[in-house]
Length: 277
Image 1 (cartoon, rainbow, N blue to C red):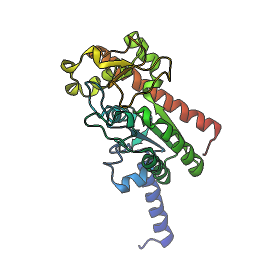
Image 2 (image 1 turned 30 degrees about the vertical axis):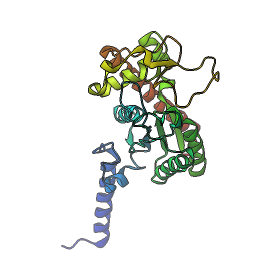
Image 3 (image 1 turned 120 degrees about the vertical axis):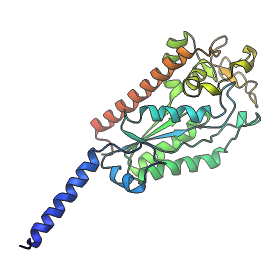
Image 4 (image 1 turned 60 degrees about the horizontal axis):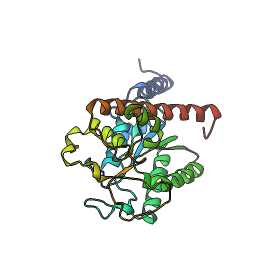
């Protein structure tokens, strides 16, 4: 006997709803936006995944560790915490604003006038794709002011929530706990983090303590372009690289735990406040 049209419609509707429900509970095949196909992305965002991690970095000298440290660190961080915070990972923006270091071999600096609208466009497009929580994992201090301004404009214009994380500052107390002293640009903290993820690209054989220079004290005492050293200590006499594998593993784990905790807590508070729901 031929089934009535309304029965067929009901069956098809039920099947469609079941497929949609399955898609919402099924884990993503990948957390990487660059690897996911557009159909799966459409199924996931925003119905299943509402958060995206966006690594921003730079290409500049870092003592005896990779020039791409500021990009490699937040990228590794994103991969480590993506499942914990239930997020997809946007491709890394590998270039940044680093005028004071562009004289060194291998450095590439993007003028702020060009970088600002590009960074804002990236965040704006992620919001347009349906993400409600945009988490900027910034690896480079020279990007901070531009990213903060872009985050503010996109959040208010698109009614989304944006968090900019400067991990080395967030982890200040972790640096002091693990190394028993302060850190530095390409110092103990950054060197340890990179040693945990790309140990084959750390070069202690090239290192000499005189390669390091403390930042001006008091702050603003002087300004040098190019910077006199690619290892810049936050405090005089502290922050020299240790190249200790045990410290590297401990630091990597504790920093990532802190960042994941901040992301989850911030989203929880946004939700509790009903902000841009």
